[in-house]
Image (tube, rainbow, N blue to C red; front, side):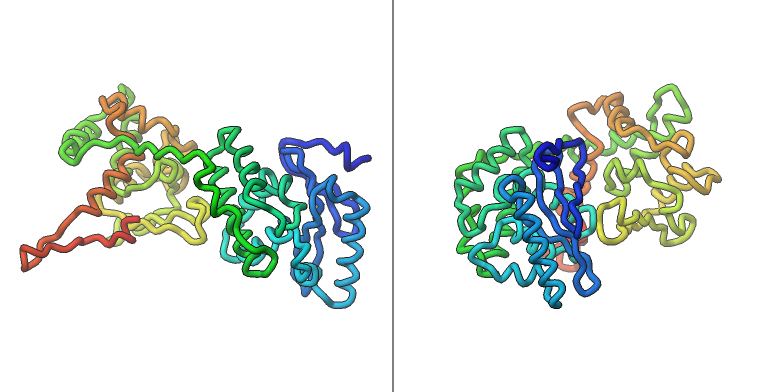
Length: 358
């Protein structure tokens, strides 16, 4: 009765039954049985299916079976995965995710699980993976697209395909049903590239930025320097806005460096940006004796507004012609097309490796 009446909340939550068994209730309303256990000192989670397809009594029976396997020194996940003919999609998905989790950062791993829990497992989770056909997957994807979540739909299809390919290799499925779905789904619209001017317009743009005036001397210095620093580093607006004093090294030396922490870049390692001397000079000017806080800020405590730089470009007459993000495209085009003359004038070389640019 309690399980049946469990209501969804804005965030996922768990209802524990004991012995590691719990019901994961998702914001979408789906209810998924899970068992948390430890084997060999490592914590794992075992999936038992969705409620009501898997009842409380059935989930408890599976818990006792798993506990018996643990008591005899066997890993329930490995033992149950050998039942290939009856392997559920959810169990295969969990094994697929566990198999690659060590290669993912924690945030990305959590996003994948949340996407599966919200949009895929409530419909396919309790099904025998071998019995799932292309129309079953298509129905799930069309449901996601119907609410306008086109990017989530694309990623869900990608994850479902990865799970099925893992299942095929493990002997639990015969094929990947997503391979024939491309023509059944509405094609994605081509992305609209950010507006940017041609290289011939750069001198005028730079001159306008250098003389930018919004009738507030302190504010205009922050805006002007943020725009120039963006042009010099090819960084994203968010990276510029949240740049803090402690991220910069050797600003007065020969090798100034901007070390953006991995957590800010959503990467597994820090992102290093070697700074041209002009960019280092901008940072020194912005700090003006400060040793903490945000670099591009009116008071050092609050990052500059996300619309401040694009608003300045609008006021300079570049609405619909140039965006801040478009600086990156402009820089990429220039670096990819740049040529350097050699002794043999007929065979110039490209000075910038494509991978460096990307």
